[in-house]
Image 1 (cartoon, helix red, strand yellow):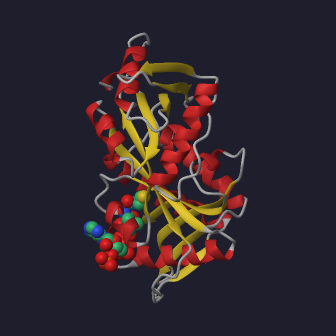
Image 2 (tube, rainbow, N blue to C red; image 1 turned 90 degrees about the vertical axis):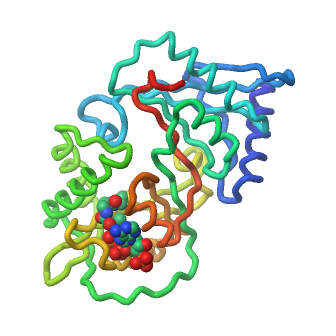
Length: 306
Ligand SMILES: CC(C)(COP(=O)(O)OP(=O)(O)OC[C@H]1O[C@@H](n2cnc3c(N)ncnc32)[C@H](O)[C@@H]1OP(=O)(O)O)[C@@H](O)C(=O)NCCC(=O)NCCS
């Protein structure tokens, strides 16, 4: 236990030195499978493997494999990621692994030495948690009508959301499953009924883009605390511009408006996930002021971990 605490403290110091926006490392939950590895210099590193199955009606399945082994590394300030990944691979040899499976690790984007180890073991940087602090950004002139979506807008919100899901399924973690329309309909109905911060951009009275957002609190004990500095954050869950309307400044206008409103609601900054292989969003989000904080390394199926 003492050495696990020592690793957590050393890992926190490593995170702070890498990136001032990373929250301190936390002790991994003890309900997973613990692995350890000895390094050449006698130091030891550890990790917890959490194994989860998502049922057919879980919305998580829209962006995740049905069965996931997630590694929560505890490598302190060592270069022990490679040794830990080798140990993880050996653990998987003892498991029955189907096709709809993945191995996942979240790790600070700026830790390039660890990135080398992830790449060497067959993991790919499939998603990035991008963050943007509330700082003055250039004013974007508004030519569109932008308004808050209401429960009456369900059909158009659903349509734009499914368009994004389909586009992202070619370039990221999203999967278009047969249940997708029903699952999205259920989730969006709830969010619209709860007056979640969702905006539509209209041109000539026709909705051409959607920004579906939320307010998330990062406080001790919340799941957000493992990823974000403390405070109230705007989460940009889905931005979608109709295919024929892309590349004409609509996304930029809508996002500028959403940022302004989320900050008015008290957000210290905003964050989102995007896929580095997405040729639109990987350019779009950095242009809107986002930069990588965490990279989600993933390999599917889980048996492909090297
Ligand atoms: C990503 C998306 C929301 C951007 O909205 P958009 O209205 O097309 O983007 P804009 O016209 O406002 O362009 C803003 C910036 O994005 C980038 N961009 C736009 N079109 C691009 C293209 N075809 N290729 C590369 N970059 C592009 C540019 O950097 C542009 O800024 P600049 O003109 O100042 O250089 C939209 O393209 C979209 O819905 N894509 C499909 C779904 C998706 O990927 N959603 C995001 C998931 S995280």
